[in-house]
Length: 352
Image 1 (tube, rainbow, N blue to C red):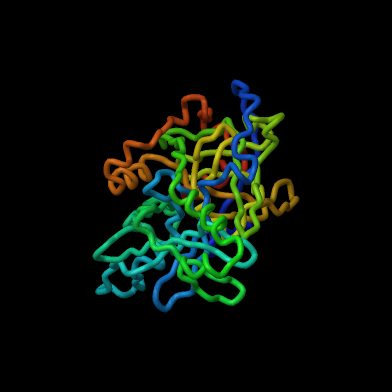
Image 2 (spheres, one colour):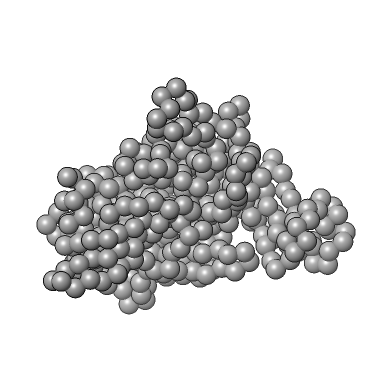
């Protein structure tokens, strides 16, 4: 059984298998939230920087006027020092890093705001035990958050063809249509839709009773990816998504996720945030002497560990969040024996 895990931002190797299953649930019909580009106004393209490192491209989802969520593996290499495992005297520390949030972009210009974080002014938060070399070891969560203050963020305009930065007043005086372009960015910057969050208790495996969607942002091009037929299969029976308690992850058949969209919010067709895009898994599964190449997407869910991370760092803003229990109609608990054969094979392997 040959398998690989591809983080949308970096590459890791891991054994993995998956196949679909049918579970009887109460039907939910007529819901088509997050099926169009304009539905994803809370999802942003971001760039991550640190001295001496190549720029990292990821995405982030804004869940509060003051907070963004992204993937931990997007920011940890930039915002924290690393130590070789053999170096017992090395101490892991926070370091200076920068996140640029793209507020608006077209074929010629982009406007971004800048979040800076460091040891003396930490704005980026993640599980201290997160290890980019063993990201799925269950000791931590692949979710990070960063603090954002719209009225205090530095705004920069860049001519992407000439790679020239403009002060806002110069941009307004020189470029036709600049005011409308800037107004769109400002409107987005100061208006944040609060997203309800589905959380998992971590005690059961679940089949999600929803269809999922995510948006891919490549420059000014945006494309919505949907896991199934939200019109005729709104509870996702034909394209099942599973929460695996032993791995603390959501797993779905790949529906268009790829490198560069790590950190994007994974939405349900009824409008809830269910996870953060984390990795791709492609592998060859052999059954009855026949080999099939399969590809799946993995998402970091909101469970006990990740919610502790949020509550520890968001202060009173945490209580503005609407946190929903997955078992309250959003997902159906599945006993181990009812999980698909491929998943059970992987779970057995991981326990060895």
